[in-house]
Image (cartoon, rainbow, N blue to C red; front, side):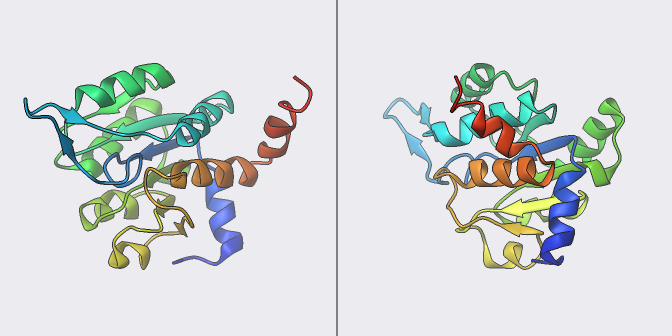
Length: 179
């Protein structure tokens, strides 16, 4: 971690926007293609519920990815995520534009990516995270490294960390005990 644990929690506690990469973060990074050339992606339902919980807690969720996928469009629609940016070459510029649209400064924004191409946007945010199986160089330059791999609960772990840092996680989880 590039910050002390209490400072990382403080950074997560300030977030109003959390954005995520897709391949290697919301998925395990493997690319599957049918004989017709259609792409298949596998998403974690745990991660999806974590994203929904962020939204329910009032935190905007965005997806910023370099690839394009119709499967991703369906997944994002299913989760009710309003901010989807595909085929992006400059993720930092997209984050800057989104911050401007939402009237947020960098300290109130976070990003989770897994590879070196994500470093410019990771370093331009107040909170940065990567997956356990992310690139080693990226792990050296982010605030939080999950214990779980991409597409295998890493996003949920980060969502829970953010919600805990904001003092919202316990109430959200306890609501399921009384439902």
